[in-house]
Length: 294
Image (cartoon, rainbow, N blue to C red; front, side):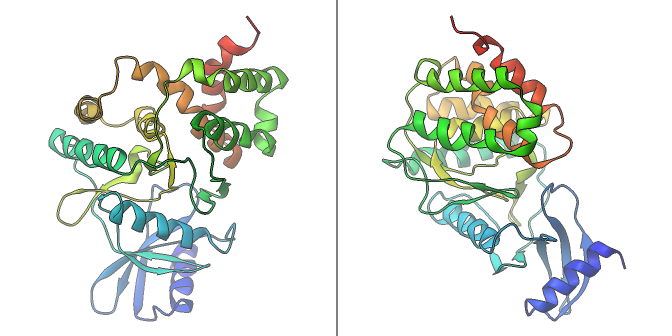
């Protein structure tokens, strides 16, 4: 038995799921340790845990996000079996089929989430978590202020970000934030998944598109779109972007905005991982036009 399976089995038994007889490690996640747990009756559940939880509320906040996406936004998510400080246990989903039909169906689901949950303010009633870092969701009336303060500048004090970005980069980010109203259109707040990279799109048992690992808030819908756009979705997903744009009335310039909106996720990656998979270079490329005042 590997260290991973022993660790998860111990956490599950401590949480009261004493009928779990085996755990198979799961690949794909970056922040937590995850696996597929088989119970004595032959059914399975998905489990994840941290070796050192970043907070007592990390899994409670994630479970709340899953319920909100499902109940408020009508998006399929796994059922929450258990959520406490030590472990999150969910019903099992299926790998997504990378077919055009699946991605078109997902376009309808995400468009419905974004267009049916508009909110007068940006934020959420509590902070939650993006990986191992707290996501600040303080209620804010102005979307530009919210994105600048709580989604971009918030990362500048992180140790790895300070090491990756020099003073000129930091000043350029501040200038970009000052100019956000010129660079991005006014958009309403809506319920967003908050960490919508391609691997967080799966399939429910009935085949519907389903989402995992949320960091929900009321924010700009295009933040979700940018994360999916820039995290190597399969070629079959092209129909998703075309259909989503039609369903939500996106203008022709939406692709040009993606690098700015994705800055938030690049900064979060730099802050949390020893390897940033090129995120610092992408940040500097996006900030290049703002390195000097014009």
